[in-house]
Image 1: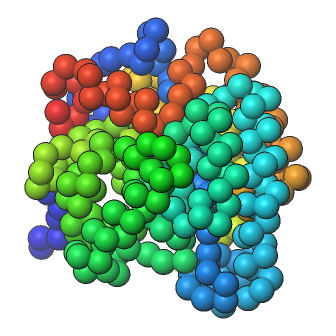
Image 2: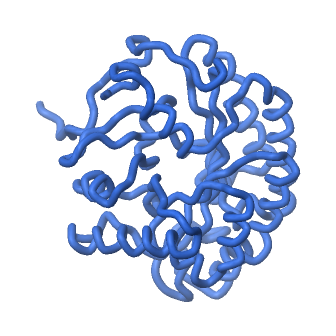
Length: 297
């Protein structure tokens, strides 16, 4: 039996990879990845706070809109208080509707990551021309509001077609976070040259954890802490990337924000052992390492 396969990267087990360290000899990179999204009213895709695959209603639209109106501003203040840089996976149409969010991102000097036009749609159902148009419109919209073009991409719902990686490389992207296959970056093949995959957790992610699997905020806090403690221990053997993935309409609810605050305090108590950074900084660092260090290089 022959299974369908891709040709994007080779199998290289963790135990067979060259060793390296992050800047200043650090072994664990820590990233807080925030998804700021916009949805259609009573149309398209969008999650619900209580029911899987629920139809679009005024209630679940307003629940998601809470993140942009309130929850994101709680998060900005928490990030400021903790003195933590963040990356923001941005729907470009969000910035048209909520320009103040883009302004705060610029003021903080955070990273903007391409995240499609809206999470009311997926790109894996598009033909190549329409997908290329989606990528271009998202890229240009973010650049118009933020002032710089995004260099990293995370597709809405982490969905890709067979040519997404090729289109992203040709659109000038340096890295993607849609392939949660590793705790280290690795290079992927495209028809126009290599593209880096940067780790992005779909496990330490408030949406699947607390919306789809109905974990409590305290359970999510425990997940974050346990993942961090174990990865810090494992990083003595190999350099790793630890990511926490959040959405302001989920984690921005005050009772959940309190749990995130406690988890962040636990992590940042060991800040002197960590490289607290963004996916873009990780991509730049990996691009400067000698060939043969990062798998696929």
